[in-house]
Length: 331
Image 1 (cartoon, rainbow, N blue to C red):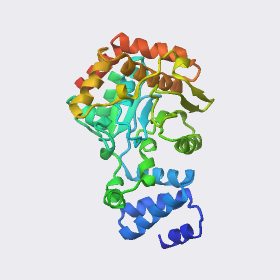
Image 2: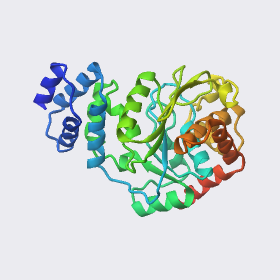
Image 3: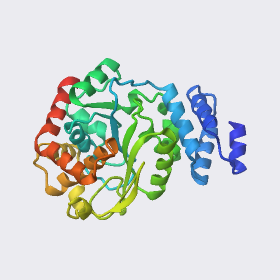
Image 4: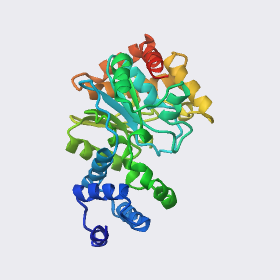
């Protein structure tokens, strides 16, 4: 670790192997907390490289619990979080819309960090019991088209840095890991990011990993397609700025996207969307995000075709049926 800190002081970049070794060393408790804190601070001040992020990813996966799914192709739909917008659980709703359209989804998530409700909060409130049992996970994805991977059950290493991260009290490289440490290692991903800098970083990460991806950012700072204004999409094949009208949607008002003041509020909105009882704005936002996930899964499809597929999944009740099947299997 002293050698790595010296490199940092000399403004040198650390290699992917360096960071893998650091992560393994952290799990073996080889370093004083002061050295770990110094490294995290130095990386944050200097700026994080693709190899540094990938090295920590390699370490998280190498020291964690794998989830080898018996499905040929599936997608994760996730946001980086931290946009401070307190939206309802748009990406989790979109997962079931995509699953209802016939695509398999393996979502990796956790409890809320910066909002009222995270994916784990919502799913647990429906009576689901989290597991890392591989037979149960495979049954879930193959019988309901959806499986949920509750992050703390898989990422063993994160508990070693949790106290340090809390005491530092500013974001570190570990805040960027969530979207890329899905233990099932999907080959396809829809990712929402809060800034264009994050979009560039993750685009390079996904290109290095060889994934099919779509990264989305609303220009006004949402880490998902909010329809409150223009949004940018970057994929393997194109980079473009869209307006809501480009995908047949009206512009949304920010207040219509909020997740409420309590977990009960958030669960009600989630259920209302899937039961076709939500407001037009809530419904449209979920359809928009699901549509770009479908296009990431099947890049040959034009986006308006994907919008229609997502809308039909929701309005037909197939998205809701996927949720019901998932709950039945996992409760």
